[in-house]
Every structure is written in structure tokens, then in C-alpha cells.
Length: 267
Image: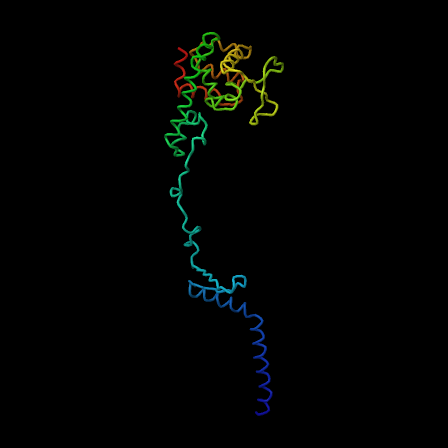
């Protein structure tokens, strides 16, 4: 029996040493395994980890992490704001073109635009009409083009007088230079093709007169048969003849005429 104990004691000592070596080698994995087991058995665990950052002069930092049993209960964004809680954009008058609320009356309500901005834009459109109504009527009497059509086209092409083409070149109808343009000045604008040259007029009246002459060419002269009271047919005829590339050009003309009561100038 004594001999057996002498042989047994070295074997136990060897096993303990091997066990301690194994624990020392895999201690981190053992800690993680215990943590996972605690998480599984206790359902909710609150942990705190203190670490030392040598760059922060020894100041300790504390990081906390909470683990919940059911991930479905965890919010995807903490303190998420609802859409109706977000601040409303403070619209400026410059954010909209002059014709915005004529061509899209529902826009103001959708975007919560201040009524003062809408009024300002509509006033700009009416001032343009007041300024050039007499000229449009004069051209109608001489060339048979409805005054409402002339005014609506001018409003579209100049954004109610606000475009650079109108303010810098007195060009109210997007009239381009002819291939052989004698005694005339042309200008290019960055928002157009670099090869598109537009006429520069000394006065706005010259632009209206050139527009009247343009509608006398073969492409448009058949429209005079419509008379001066059927502005809707004139709008469709201009679109069909290719006056503008906008596929809704005729609809926009009619919408502007109706919204601003321009048909009154055709009587």
C-alpha cells in the first residue's frame, strides 16, 4: 500500500499542473463561456467595463452595455423622432419660380408655404400681365394672334419676367438668332446649349413684334383660321407645330390663361 501511494502522488501532481497550464492558456475562452452561460440562465445582464487609456492621463472611462432577452423589444433608433415632430422648413420666396403656384396650385398646401410667398408670386405674374396686356392686344389686332396666347407664352418663357433672357436681352419668347442674322445681336446663356444663340432686343416691344412675325411663317400661319377666341385650340396647334419641346406645353398655356383670366383680353 505504501508503495502504491508513492507512485500515485506524482501522478496527481502532474494532472494538477497540466490543468493549471490549460486554464492559463484558455482563461479568456473560459470567461466568455461563463458569461454566455450567465446570459442564458439569468436572461438579463448588466455589465460595466473599466479600461485605462494612457493618452487620457490615467482617467478611467466607463462603458455600459445592456443585453435584453428579446431583441424585438429593443428600439432600432433611440429617441427616434416622428415625422410630424421634425421642424418645418422655412421657405423663402427665392425657393420658388414665379409661375410655381399658377402651374401647381396645390404645392403651397403640400409644402406648407407661407401665404405671403404665394401672394407675392401671383402678384408678380399679374404685374407682368398688366405691363404687357396692351402690347399683346395691339399685336392681336394686327396679326390675329390671341392676346391671351401671347401673354401666356411670354409668362412661360420669362418666368413672369424674371429670366435673364428677359431682364438682360428683352427677349420674352425665347427667340433664337437666324442663321443669317443681319444687324442683330445674339447671346448665349449657360442654362442652354452652348450653340444656342438668342436674340438681344433693345426693347421688350421689339420682342413682341418679332414673336408676331414668327407666327406668320408657314409652320404656324394655319392657326390664324382658328380666330382669336379659341385659345385652347391655339395652344394645341402651337404644341403640334413644334413651338416648344415640352410635351405639356399646350396644357400649361391653357392653365395659365384660365388661372389669370387672360382670355378677357381676347374679347
